[in-house]
Length: 275
Length: 275
Image 1 (tube, one colour):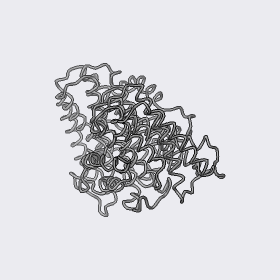
Image 2 (image 1 turned 90 degrees about the horizontal axis):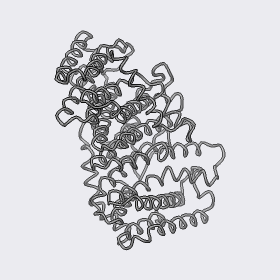
Image 3 (image 1 turned 180 degrees about the vertical axis):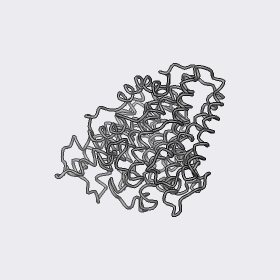
Image 4 (image 1 turned 180 degrees about the horizontal axis):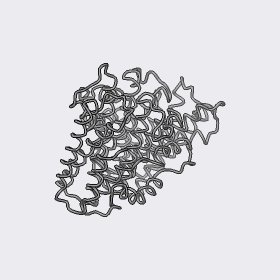
């Protein structure tokens, strides 16, 4: 099965779970609950949940075991987009061809909707009963990972000169983008029953895939006006770096055999997609 | 021991835990980490952590058992103040006599600092290993409680006419203020080993105390320009309602005996304080 087919199949698990986790759009406060759903339905490619399911299967777990983590990771991803789009951050008016949450519902409601999505992520995951999984997701969402990456990205973008320090750029990529992808993979493995060594290996796989994913994202983003892009170092070098990361990631999970094939397909798709 | 003495004594447990949970102020991104600490040190009265410790002791637990929950509740409280102060929300320039986080560090960093404090709350609590406790805190922080209350409060404040619907105002109080206080008490009881019935009774106690606390807060807030205050219904009636809630709360825990005395003292202090 190819990556998009896998994502479609797993969406049949994910979408009802996300829908059930959110209060109905009409429940008071109605604008808050509508705003929470605005960017979540329809969402994007659901790549992070897909990686979470596939990591669970790669270690021998049934995909349904990963469902709370897959939903939680997508909720964290969605919250981060809602806040990143705010006027005081990246100030984006549209995302995925639709108005951003603050354009559609106002800035205060967008801040609150993001806050509520973040809290909901932890509620959904905590109800699965695995406190260590919650700690793993919280660390990925915190000031040393996701939020720290956004803060560093804002600082780089505000610099007078474009930043071409490859190490500084990769630090932003690692925190802002790769950390949550590593958590998606790590949580899937954890809920699928991986032992500590297997979990660590899959997290390292996820971090490499996440870095390569972000390089691809920057290469695809023709409108990218940020300083934070390896594309500034030259597209061919950036493509080569992404392929090297992918190869390294795949080597890490070579021993997992055929049941890791969806995970490999998703990794290739994350890095080689054309949109 | 009186309430302030109890709070001072438990601060000796709490403050080092909070300090150790936060990255050092100098760690990169330095402005983010300094912003996370800005409102937390020095904090306020630490009433919510105090209630958490006291509830733990009321059910026979050592106060140190409640420490992760006490810290997590204070982190959630602090995040909510940082976001509530934002220009797009209540637009406050000062809090506790100091510049608010967005005034001191900028709006983007204030949004991110709040986000990171929220994620950190769940990380700290999750590391205690009790997933049900995480779910309880997450529900209290979510769109049906804390965040929903702030959304309803903003909507009431934006209304053309002052809202004097007592039920609507109490709904805001319950969600925006009492829910987190109920969670503080409930989490302390849970980590102290309470069974389900005792936990439920203490949560109900916390909800009543939280409602009375918010009425007192509104009565004390001479600068209150919001529509959301029972004080608008008349101060004598509001004071009587707060005392009735306190009496009801104390009746709920009458059977707990002498080890619940700090919890009773804190409840009386929360409702009868003069600042």
